[in-house]
Structure formats: structure tokens, C-alpha cells
Image 1 (cartoon, helix red, strand yellow):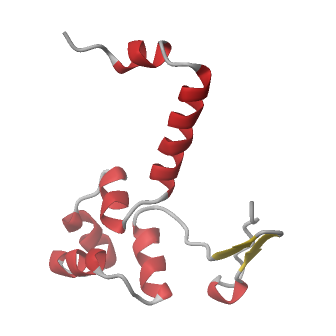
Image 2 (spheres, rainbow, N blue to C red):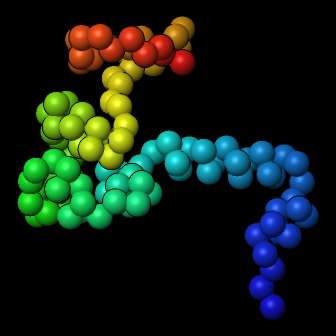
Length: 109
């Protein structure tokens, strides 16, 4: 009989749980647009409706590896999010402001 994940997790060493948690966070932090859309509970049709385009346009957009930042921003906003462009260096992070819109004052973590 299969064990529940919670039971298996309870038997893991604290270090193993920490590694598993860290890996899960990395996987969540790195998602393709199609995975992000599905995680937000949206269909391509629903997203197309919000963006006033047809569903095939969403399918094409999700397959692209290169797009305008304005296109990506619109896509993210249609899913209820905000896009930030941040450059991370060993000595800190810098938010690239010329990609932000006027009045956008979010902090960089």
C-alpha cells in the first residue's frame, strides 16, 4: 500500500526535508509561461479573452524564447501579476528602472 507524502516526510531527516523544500522552491521559482498559466488556473482561451487575442496567439507566445518586454508584461498582468526586471550581482540586486512604468515603486528584495 502506498504511503501518504506527509507520512514519508515525517520520517525524513531535517536536512533532507530542508533540501527537498529548497528544491521545491527553486522549481516553483522557475516556470515556463505555460506552466505559470496552468498554475494560476487559467486556460489559453481565458487568457486570450483577457488579452483580446485568439487562443492560437497564446499558444505561440508560450512557445517563444524571445519576446518584447511589453508583451511579457501584458501576459503576466493578464494572469494577475506584475513583471519586474532585476539584475542580480554578487554584491546585491538592482532593479532595472527603464523597464518599469511611471509610478511603479516596488522594492527589490
